[in-house]
Image 1: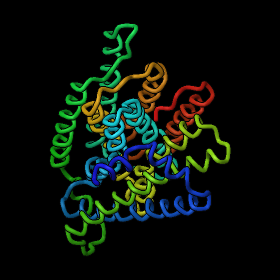
Image 2 (image 1 turned 180 degrees about the horizontal axis):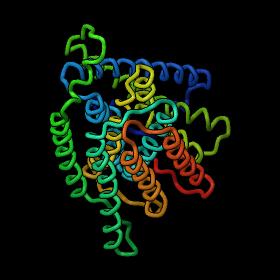
Image 3 (image 1 turned 90 degrees about the vertical axis):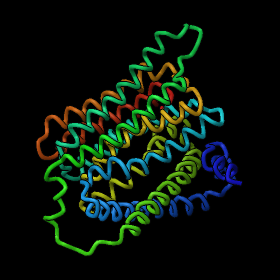
Image 4 (image 1 turned 30 degrees about the horizontal axis):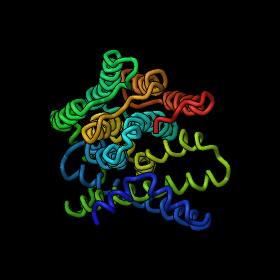
Length: 354
């Protein structure tokens, strides 16, 4: 029974077959319900995270980079591992790389345009290097594998790479916790706020976990439903893949960003994006590679990997440039790079990274 449920959730084909049998009016209702679930789930999660940060004394950016980012990358991780396990490992690498591009280019870029995002230099000068370093490591390993793969064979990320990434993930989570504890003054960031009665620790975790579940379920059902409607209205499949699917897999991060901005905690968004980028390499791609070796298509070397590195190194430069907050033009730049990436996929007929 459990394996059937997991297969239904993790298998894109089964989900697409299910929504294909529904009427357009039913799909519209499902989409409306999913959007409501995403919104309410994100609200619950942010409320729980803020109180959790106040209770533990950890900065909200750290909670965002660990607890929240672990939760919002679960959809990618689950889908990628299930895809690899069920014999479709090609989806897994694209899922991780495409999510990094969408998270940093689209979601963080949009956040910078909409609101002044504070720069926590102590954390970002450390986790920001892990963010760009993990992605660079993925590209370097992939290039080395390509150079050592016979011309007639396809380069593969083997299980040892996945195990290596998961070991690095464990170290990253532990070191992030140590950095947070070493950050003098940040643990007092809530003292300036009005004192208010905190919810119980159990309720904090209930809101965080419950909110994540609503976001994950909402995003998981919304993407194939919206894709099905788009196809019925004559939108080409490659456009759907390059835009709606890529956007949809990052819906948890997007809804978290919107809720965090609306509630006045944009630093949670920064932590979530940085953490999600690290986890997309070490957790999503790492776990999928352990489940089954991942093939590296040719277009990743000349298109998807370069796009990912341009966006991440731009973000890294912005961290170095800013003393107090990210600037609106920096968000415009990230959005422009993301927009160019999506446009070129369609214009040049390059396979989507999802």
